[in-house]
Length: 317
Image 1 (tube, rainbow, N blue to C red):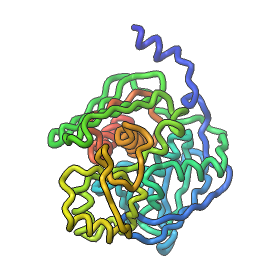
Image 2 (image 1 turned 180 degrees about the horizontal axis):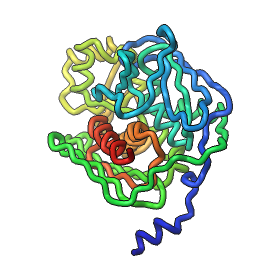
Image 3 (image 1 turned 180 degrees about the vertical axis):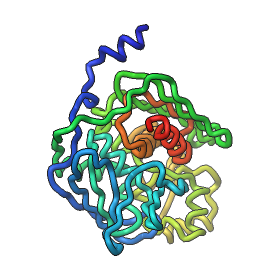
Image 4 (image 1 turned 90 degrees about the vertical axis):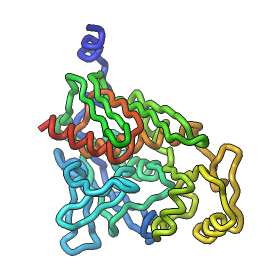
């Protein structure tokens, strides 16, 4: 009864607004994490009920890929979309920035398959969108109001996503990586108004064994140790040290007492959990509607996030 009363009588902030886009287009450039090439991105205003979409301006006809769960084909190293053979990689960080600022309609033009990685967080996308200015539009937000508990579990990984009725959009992440260097962490966002300050600057991370595998396979060409926290979960051999120095153009690399490489310092003790929360927000943007409910994500990852987004999309339809 108390939950229902809170649900019905809440003082909504972002939830009660009209749809929003940006006032003017804004451009930013950076390096693609996997390709190592310079990527140019232009964020453009979009009309009501447009939602989020990417446009590949480097391809003939500038094909558009809507940011919807049905177009996700791969969740390795990010959430990757594909439509009619046209690919968008690692879509989640820029989408999280848009959702976190209460934007509903946005066209994202890029001249490559992946947005620039920037520093591995969403803060540069947030800054660009704020620079463009947010503009209210003459249409109500299409909102999915959660009326009952929705649950999804990935049996293979043990990851779980639960969505419960709530008076606004909240997300809690509980992560457990099963390693001594990075054990159990939690993070919560109680209101989207706090996204910019509490979540947007949380950077992506990898474990040393993943970095080694990616380097061996010719990936993370754009990695320069400034766009990812690297947790050292195994002994650092001389050979690995030499490979890392060459790959990241450093003369010296050491491990800090907290178990991360000395390329950077953590913004928060639970930065990994906060970044996982950022990813959840970006991936659930693929549902295509604003959610009014509380997401509780246990051991989230792109695969379970997207599987849950697909399930939610079907329920909404």
